[in-house]
Length: 231
Image (cartoon, rainbow, N blue to C red; front, top):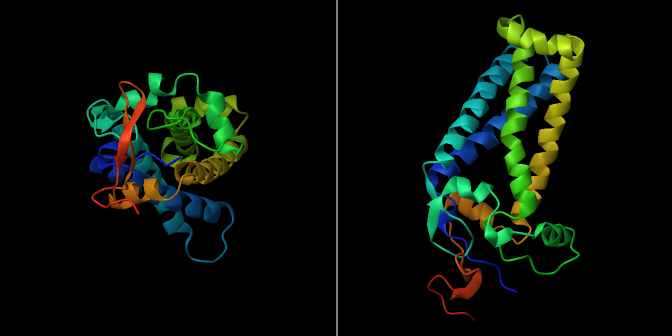
């Protein structure tokens, strides 16, 4: 079965920008995080710590901004359509992907050839993406609990005491880095399992033809060759 068309309405420019910011910040945070724990060359610790703190605030602010924008910006609720609605609806249960959790898991595990026709995000994607803001806020909390200017504040000192001290807090913060590394790898896989069209539109705004879809009726309505005859 052909795949759904990928239109710009599914990923407006403002969301592509926030996605780029997240990617850059994540790369810097992972690199500097590794360096802070395991300095593999001399003379870089001050820069690494400064960059780690700076980009930590960047990714937290970007996360909060993305949540706010989800209630303000219209996006397509499915591939293959230019019909738009408020973006936050993409993250909630939709009739387009209701009762499809097992089908999506089978598809991602190569036990099912064709993916279910559903919303812009499959069920496992929704669950993973909804967890990201929670994990980011938790990661930010543990980071601020370790940062000297905020570590002694009651709110952060309480958390450090709760987990048994500063060393345990460091271990938790470091472990969370691996959670985000694993999430990033899984995210790349889930986003590109059908091909690289989703990445092309996310990073470059490049649309890709395919099946057109009516999210109101939940049916395929035709095929859009993006101005080119099918060969």
